[in-house]
Image (cartoon, rainbow, N blue to C red; front, side):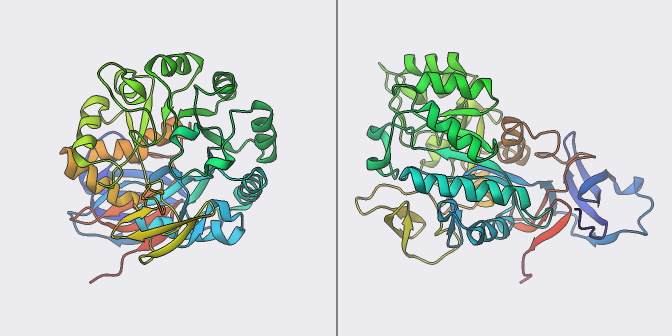
Length: 397
């Protein structure tokens, strides 16, 4: 059932549409969809619309899509409650995120099942507009390599188990869209082949695969890398590892956490020079402490200390981030000197294409969902529309 909200007309702003940047542009949104984009001098029929006029230097860009996020504002996908997902879909538009994959983590099997079942039920009945949309699930673990566990609890890591995965996918009504796994572990290539055949993204992550093993994974159907540089075999001049493969193999699109903590700015720049804007996806990998104060939090049953922009386990291991996707967009522009159009490609276009939802998400074009972010002159998120309804507006100073 569609809740009809007033048709909206955004006018007088820079519109970064799918085809071009329109300096003095407008966007019309009706029944959740973008129905017209153009230059102000082409604007007619504005009577039925609620008009939102904004400063000429404000920018309208497509909503961000986070394919790797565990939690925000005290809630986590692994909480396995409706309330947790309500919190996430309400909080994320504040950072410009209009859709995402709810991401699980390595845990005891029953806990993963509870989280998967809860998210699948939620997806079926989620709000039709005005909140971020859950596009499916990202299963991060338990099919990873204990040697590259990071914050994934080692005691619950298992080798890729296709029978178990099929059980979980049935349980979620086919809503697992992306799986992070270690292809070098027994059963890894078999699982990748199955994922490929069934239109599910196979991502190499928390893995100690060699360059040759990554090649085999690509042959089997892997086309994605989970948080580039983090918890994977790094670049070495005699063993290019996963990082070298990500740089050299165009088949792989790589997620990257651009918070300046997980990956040093110079390494972000190196990755950008190697992969360009069509080869990277900005993610947050954020945990429940995002948008919260410094303090102690839980991640997968482990205590995490959040202090000064970093989330760490007791031994100092990074435990997800508290990064906002809107900040990642600002950071990538600052670290690499890329254009806003390039940043949009990494935050919106590429994830939409990778998830096979580009026909309705990921760019501003007529007929697509009214997922729109308005940035101010400092590239800060000022307003977010989720499927045509205002979901966030920054308090004016």
